[in-house]
Image (tube, rainbow, N blue to C red; front, side, top):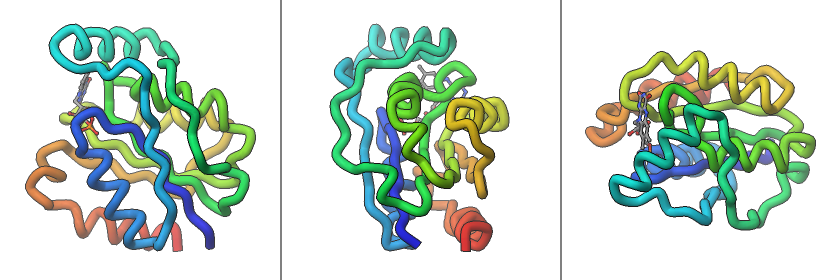
Length: 155
Ligand SMILES: Cc1cc2nc3c(=O)[nH]c(=O)nc-3n(C[C@H](O)[C@H](O)[C@H](O)COP(=O)(O)O)c2cc1C
């Protein structure tokens, strides 16, 4: 099975999980890069506003074609209870090229279900599996069991 892992990460926790998944599945990685960098307090506020208002960010062109993959795993941080605005932008552009999806989300502690529902709604399909982790679990490397469970659902 050919797998693409697509993610956005402002502070590298989703990136860490994306890289761990790429290694586990021998998958390809696509990092979504936003034009705006969301740094500093004004960046944080802009990110929160865009998340809350379901705004699609401006993103840089991506390299991989999701249609070339059997499964696309999408990873997003939680921004004000919603998916991050660069992930929304990516899915609005690419959703029709995605055959099957799975989702992961690293967030502070909010209920991840509304984010997974938002991702599924945008993709127009249900995920094969979902993985929700807290920021702290990622920074302390306490996620191997969750990763294994997620992988088992996909295999
Ligand atoms: C603007 C903004 C809003 C956030 N809102 C939430 C939230 O509502 N709930 C939550 O659990 N975490 C929230 N977070 C925390 C991030 O989801 C968390 O730090 C995550 O690990 C960041 O992922 P990254 O390191 O891949 O960027 C927010 C972070 C930012 C920057």
